[in-house]
View: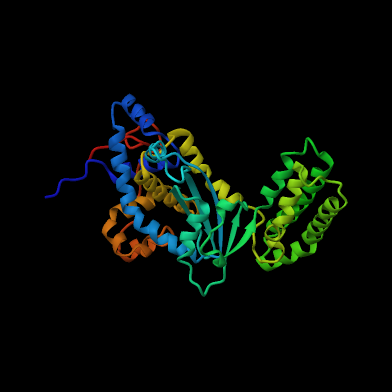
Length: 376
């Protein structure tokens, strides 16, 4: 007879969500558990969380290919800390690239998928790797980003149609409005009017084609007037091209086509806020837990954070979902496509198996609460 597991599956997945979603460091969880008289060393916590990722990573890898087939992707990245790579940076000679990033790619279309990638690669390279899986017969994916060179894919650019963030363009002016109040107010007011039209479309729940027609009727004249005015300011030498205001004008005009895709493509978003919101979990983790030990640890974090955020975006309880993956690990490996957050319940029903619930009480201090191990 096989001995039961020392720790319940519910403890493992609750630790994973506590660490990566809430950003609770292992040492902080260990300290809390010591207070409760139920110590769980940080190394043991890591071992348990690694088991969660080991059950989830086949789905994570499959989501890359599925994400590549969606209609739209929001993209952004932020800095990361990986101790093993920081040590590499101190070598002589140092590596060619020293920076570290966490990239988020949020895909929208038939499915909503959010994936994170942490390492040396910047956002453009991570997107390139995903676009390699895109069906060449599909139209280019709508790719929303902040127009930075590091965000641009180099090898599969033909599979993406760039959309640039209108809020990022606006920020060029809000940063300098104390120095050029009148000119900046003109630009900011124009963009605000476009967002009022967008709010109307959301309030009326307009379909993509109806939204496009509304923006073409109401926002297009605003944006056309703004473009003509900025060009005239530069041509009449009322704005110095090398000034900060001139640079802000140049940014908008250079990226005008990508900034105004919403006037030509049904459903095209105005900004990259979805990606920036998706990075909040990474920023919370970085501010509290500070770093990953090595690249393997970063991959474990990517697998679990991607699973949690994809569950959240699809209205799925991540604790129950990760529990189901752990209870059915061999079946997940056999067919990961049957274990996506949106279809795993149907898979369990076909197996005549109830959905495993994470029965950890939500009250901190009770056995089974966040970070409290309950031996079986």
